[in-house]
Image (cartoon, one colour):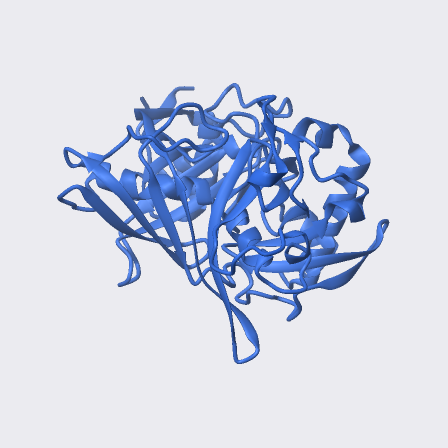
Length: 396
């Protein structure tokens, strides 16, 4: 059987890669999207490599983005993020990707979806996954999104032109509440694990935070060491599932096992010397805290950007797990420097108390992006039976 061709762009946004589609090139029936995305990325792949698709075998390289006209008056574009599972035939829409968010404004400008002029562009992005607004500010080069610049980000070689992302009112992106349980810290009774202190925070993406020492960890373990520790990975997943129920994201731990996208789970520790994936060193004096995150069942090689923003917000919640490891004396409005596997990530978050309740006003960080390939992605006709039955695609 032949293959179908679909216009697409392959882009890097921060420390992630994704196949990006213009919404006009996809069927209006979104029920048909999953089989296209799975076929394009190369999932499911029991070998975990996605060699027969555009994916890279890890969650940060197994992504699809869709950009189209806005459905809100305060936005210039709609952006839908799809996390494609590597080994399963499943596409999750329950969370946003902060890294790929940095590429959405440039994609919209370069595609002509958003008309701009001058030296800089501001694109207001409506993320349909979280129903939140993100402002992307970036330079232009002859009317297109600039690529060359002097910003280096951990985990990406070389430098690029900065994209400033401002997440407006990021609280409650998944659950509708910054603190889904109403508390900055809770004690979860986790089957097979026991009682463990946790902060369950929903800012940009819902995440449960635990202290590394409560897991018997140092906090500076690298991804390969974590992956090789089946007992710890099992414990983290059990905590994540219990938190999912406590945050009312799912009704049962069985449902939570099926929903791998949210909540994320991360563990934190105080600022300390550590080695990076590159072999270079991070010194404690250069950071304000240390963090590690599990994304879709895999230790993240850097940090998901939305989760980093959540960590920065959580660091400002007095009495919480993240706040207790934050370097003492860190000014309330100062950016927070997070030590992670690929280096140091700096995130700013404004968090205040209003009427006795915590409120996250905004969070911001800088990323780089690059359009790396544009053309057509080919998918096997045999892998998109719904599209064939609907007669929605032309065979190449």
